[in-house]
Image (tube, rainbow, N blue to C red; front, side):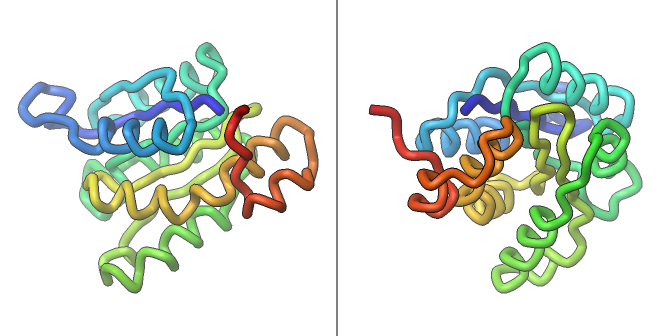
Length: 172
């Protein structure tokens, strides 16, 4: 599987803060055997987010795109709107599972507006902006990523995915 990570942060995009969530997600994905083909940082602007999501899902042809940041109630938090504008099919169960799984750890999980969906053969998932929150949410969805990618590719409900709880078996 190949993934891309898009950090959405005005301060990081301006060079006023260091991106910690993108590298943390990259390290966690690589540890799971998911190759991170690209990382980018954009400001909290719908147009910039949309352009990167389209580029990552189309030009780069990755299986997964994870966004980090811009999912809250802040006036510039527009990642869900940008994501909704580019996806072709919604995947509401993923966002619901992230919120439900995060709620026992932090009551602010109910304030997340993150979404998920498909653009072509790429699954796009919005994650929180904090490294801890992003990693916790990644942990929630990780067991089904391999199976999701297989289904998107038209491979159906493979026995291999079921045997590994949704995750692909490691390459031999």
